[in-house]
Amino acid sequence: MTALGLFNYWAVIFLMMVGFYTLIARGNLVKKIIGLNIFQTSVFILYITMGKITGGTAPIFVEGGEDVIYSNPIPHVLILTAIVVGVATSAVGLSLVIRIKEAFGTIEEDEIQDESL
Amino acid sequence: MDDRVILRVGAKILIPFILVFALYVQFHGDYGPGGGFQAGVIFAAGFVLYALIYGLENVKKVLPPQAVYICSALGVLLYAGVGYVTMALGGNFLDYGVLAHDPEHGQHYGILLVELGVLITVFGVMVAVFYAFAGRRRADT
Amino acid sequence: MVEFVDIALLVLLGITAFSILRQKNLFAAVMMAGIYSLLSAGLFVVMDAVDVAFTEAAVGAGISTILMLGTLALVGHSEHQPQHRPILPLFVVILTGAVLVYGTLDIPQFGDASNPAHHHVAPHYLEESEHEIGIPNVVTSVLASYRGYDTMGETTVIFAALVGVLLLLSLGPRPRRVVSNGQRISDTDSGKPVSEGGVEEAQEDTLQISPEEKTLGDTNG
Image (cartoon, rainbow over all chains, first blue to last red; front, side, top):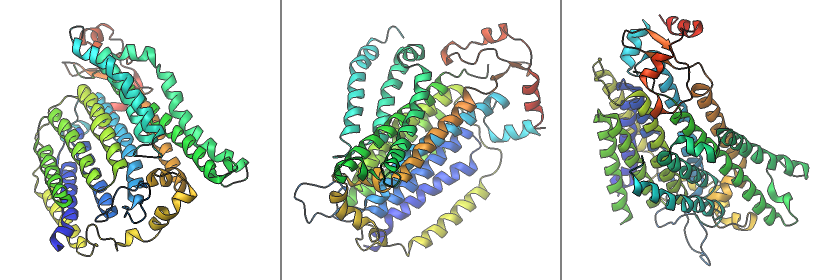
């Protein structure tokens, strides 16, 4: 049970590290933003994992259900807004990439560095 | 684009349902999954689908960019406005209980208005961002 | 059964994330990012977060993919091999991962009802919101009423992000083009759609290099 009880967290850490690696090791700016999205989604999964209660159900009241266990709604609220804010900030990042392409003619980090030297 | 009959006809049938579904998600959000954020994105997706199939000029005739910009500011104003109305009625900022005689009804009205504000802003922002990206020309040769 | 679906979805997410990392074609990477979002939406349903799953499916797999594809149409879709060796980033990532795994050993077990996260305001929301707010969906009542300030802040952030995008893409200086001889020329019309922007048209209306744009590029040296 111990291994299964922590499996979710380890999977989240794996996803987080894949996103982190994409972010720091790849030179392409669009790829970096995709890596940032992977990282971001792994954080969402971490929060939602913490809100889950075994045998619980979605936090929407059912008729006459007195002894129903509901999962914790607070992480759901936090992540719900974070997803929409995440796409809005990704849009800002992508428009910066477009402007960099127009200014330098490339979106590869190494080539941008060469050009600005 | 003229030869893609299935896409054009299919989209024409689908788009009204997408928009109505968005409104269902919005107003059923109190009783099931849904709310302003999801509804705004789905409503915007209807217009994005129209733009992808019929072209950006045509969707801009239906929904001019100016209207979208006004929408995205209007939603935030509506949200904050509800807060100021509750203050004017003697409650705290965003304390919906004072909006009606029965505090529970007041909460209902407040949540409805606030979710509407979220819907309008999210819809406006998503469509406006799509316009900004799709209206840009390719920079290199 | 829930555990089985959970583990299957997490393994699929891991495979998708890893293939995004390996993928050189950015179009394929963007489509796989859409698959990744859809899989995580499935995982949120298993974890009882139906509202979150709904949002992730609409935003992550829908609008986000459209925006990425719109960007790729403007910037091209091939990725070059990075020049530096991946040893240092790999070291950083493995070290960080190891520290985080060490940190998880103290975290309460998955699905444990005695988890501290379930003990402060969450029971209040679950027990009282039916009387205080009167709507069945607790997520909506927390989102719009108990944490109304928070949601107002988020709405404002979304609006601010739109202002940022418009400043960068609609109102800024006109896009420059890099022509074949390497000389930059300014473009006269930035408001045309992607499909109509042709090279010939741009070279016809080659006017002059506007001075502030020239300095913008050169001050980086």
